[in-house]
Length: 240
Image 1 (cartoon, rainbow, N blue to C red):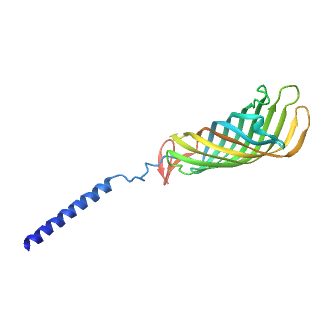
Image 2: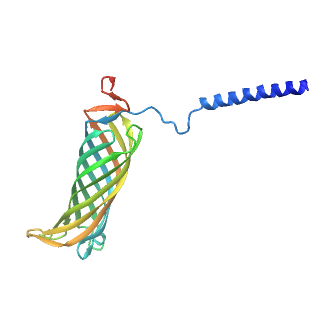
Image 3: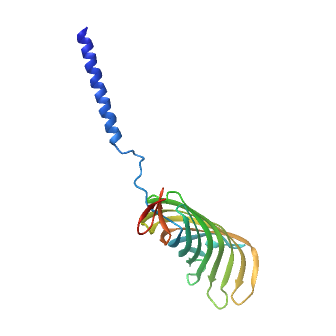
């Protein structure tokens, strides 16, 4: 009987030691969901953005003309000037220019250029992480310049950019710069058309969209760099 009790005590002590060692080992292992140290994010800073992208139009260019029947894919660049009020939010003004190729059905000698001016707000989901997803929502005005062969027959078509949505990922490379891919598109309502040398006329609303995908660089100037619970300047760190 004593032998059984002694054996039980030994087994109990051994089991407790084993469980304690295993618990200690598990507590020393990093959590699979644990994140690294916070990355300083810009706040109260001027923000410059530059992107280059592929563009593809869909919809109508005039009330009875499919835009894809005359315009193919192209490329564009955008300059973005903004204010990063807090790490997770910024407001900006963007100026976009694109050039597209003509569809072979109308001849490659024709050319199409255009642009847009957009006011937009951007929300950053993980501003203190190296990988920071974001989404941007805005609206503005869009212009399409159709350059057809021959004299005095160019068209300037323009209207409201009702909404523009972009989504992307910033990869923070330094405290002042980030780069990453993005995709998006807009919805435009073309309302006016002017034939070269003529007057601007009101046309039946023609709805189209320009789908875009590319890469964007974002550069922050001035302001401060913050992490949760502290403000990091370019010279020193101070607790709030």
